[in-house]
Length: 231
Image (cartoon, rainbow, N blue to C red; front, side, top):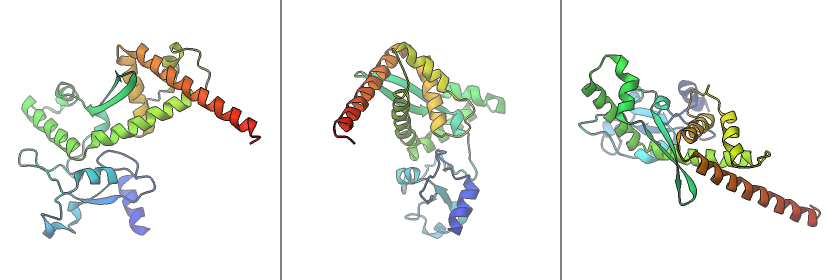
């Protein structure tokens, strides 16, 4: 219990890699240099990083390479929330979410004020990209985005929506731009912004509206069954 309080206080109860809330689980200690290959550093404090189970499971005993080096949040932190790209697409009449890092051109725009030349920034970008892929942060955030999308659909099903034209208006009202961490509200904001940007927003809103109607019909059918059974 004491160990848990110390770690949570140190990390603000968030994974330093994907910025996720630890929730009810204890953080897992990742060996930056894996113990399978670097046994002498197995209890070296700077080699131990408390991270979430998703990031730890993705990395396992993998490590950086000679070109990309090793990226550790003790020395190489970066604002992940500013470097994420969310895209909403339509595939086989279903809404699909894509989460990735911004491309290098956008990365260069964000960091060009640091007075580094383009080659230096490109090396920094590829190192972050390597770290992002090593821990499969994109997959972790994609799973969370899909959950946020389902929750958003359920939330919309509880209000009066007359047509797909009302969907986008309601989504815009849901936005809250004050989110600093990558939590559910942050992901929801990014998804809504992606819907606003895409040329297929009308098609997406039609799909969302159809999903909302299905949920409402299922709720109504369930209520009728309960009524018939006097539940």
